[in-house]
Amino acid sequence: GQSLEQPSEVTAVEGAIVQINCTYQTSGFYGLSWYQQHDGGAPTFLSYNALDGLEETGRFSSFLSRSDSYGYLLLQELQMKDSASYFCAPNNAGNMLTFGGGTRLMVKP
Amino acid sequence: DAGVIQSPRHEVTEMGQEVTLRCKPISGHNSLFWYRQTMMRGLELLIYFNNNVPIDDSGMPEDRFSAKMPNASFSTLKIQPSEPRDSAVYFCASGGVAGVTADEQFFGPGTRLTVL
Image (tube, rainbow over all chains, first blue to last red; front, side, top):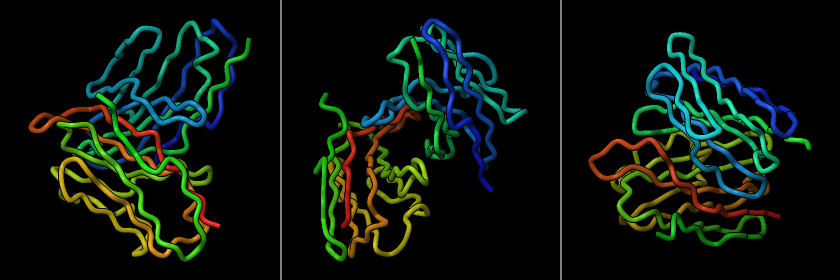
């Protein structure tokens, strides 16, 4: 079967670093995507890991370990505007994504 | 590019009525996805089209839901009859470039459906 686990909520202060972990179990795994969604908005793409290792995009980095069925999103130099929900989503055949409930990140001053 | 366009943005209807949600994907994208988002269930994939053909509809909750993609620039999601538990935000997303595997999905602004 398929399963996806990430923390439901994380709180951090402005300027800090936060890591959002994701463990998954799925068949036909191609890679792991991360999406950001602000309240009232639509999900927007952040990153995609097809291979093991770290992908860096500005303040955000994403990591994947296929052997551990594990990934994380690292957000550095947190800003208030980073307050949002973050979804990890395994990619399956046909670029189908499996989303879960996401992690709600609250950044405090 | 205008991005993925969805209409209506908000829909309020009464139980038993037919609801039709519309989506125009980004030109050139060959994949189209319909999602539903609720607090209880998170973001769920309902159906996936590739080159206008339904590939996976295993997420469609029941026969009251149907989706079509008559051409590359238009898709509909229909609920008939609607029920209060169908209240949710429905997102359409498109992705992929014909002949190329792409990783990013582009989401539309969503349709907030309320069934009374």
